[in-house]
Image 1 (cartoon, rainbow, N blue to C red):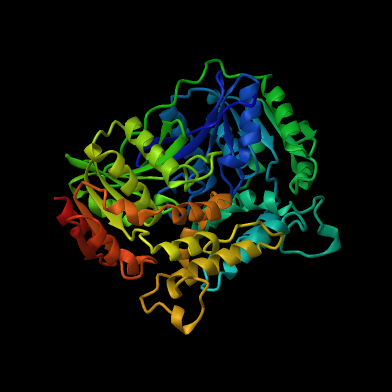
Image 2: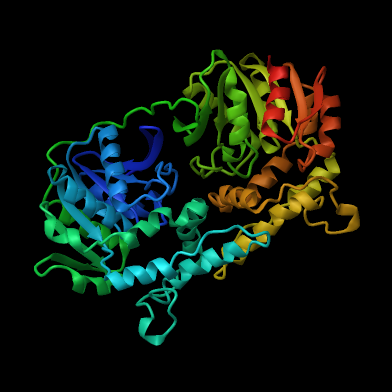
Length: 556
């Protein structure tokens, strides 16, 4: 049985570091390549855990779910110091250290600075470059990430990753620099490219530091045992000739699980003396959103939390499909008087996937489990679009736990329309070799603001609203969906398959029905408000501050 991997955040100064952890025993820290994330190291994390280590894979600052360093142009020594701070926060004194590509560069600088804290350093590909190569990579390899209205940045990102498996370096297209590799199948490409999209504009911040770092100089200063491993087909293989004579090198098979098992065996030669302590609790950071996970029978669920007031806590259930990060502005502006939390439902955003088919009933059970885990017996509850269905069902089932209810853009649709949309609104996302599925989703999301329904590109379908189609916003929205892309169509089918309208008359708590003008389901709020006995009805201002004032007036 493969080792189970859990996810955590640790507070390091004024930033949060996200990590994945498995196993028990002496600690091994795993550092990923750029612009990736700890999830990509799961085969290695499991292999080290199975070999008797506590394996802790960190998201590098600015990648995955870890915060950026508070520096305009961080360098590899800054990342090495950030690693020291993270180890201190985790209570780790001495570690085994595993780094892949960029992670190997951070690891070697850390091992150079703190040899007494490293039992062994082990690399899966070390970026050994000449000065000329570093200059060339800085000039050509890292074009800026810019979101464009037509989604062309998505195709560029997809194919830049794919090109790494065809040419090394990717900006030179000749026979002599064909890579000893082949492109991944589309289904494997999807999770591999996603972290580059998550990083977005911060794509080159950490990555560029690798090419500014004179990575050959510290090699003769290392005191801890150091193994330079390399899998066959790795584009960094040619750099092995630049390593100092007598360096400990290992050539491993291409197959990642096989190589990971070998790496774990190699780490057994030099083991840290003490077992890793349990994960520390997240420490709040005043004035900002804190992310954490709660353990439920539906797996780990992501919670975003702001505020520290004494008022009754407020819980936001985001729309499905998608995650709660798009409501960060509202979350912060509502947090003046109370703690405000946004919870990603199972199979959405940064929460765990579930094997059961998505449904409003399942998400409602998960909301109950999350509130129990958070020890919140009574809350102010807010649901948006599909999340409004979950919030309404929860309030109908557990009126004693909901002091007040806000339904933002509820899907209280006429029955014939609901049934049509259930079967037609969302198309399955199927990865394509050329990345076309990303572009198709992009224009679906864009069209949601321009036409009703999104596929009705006729004069009758035109939405005369201020469209929320700024490219950076759409990129974030698309990214949240792609984290669980297989659940996109089933999630839409689940929210349209739920008969919301009949439920509204059964709600016995104070209700506010509202929507922004450009909300896809704003046209149905009048009917929803009339269906709820005694409900208040209001148009929600577009800006977060105005929306927070209106909602706070209702909440008291």
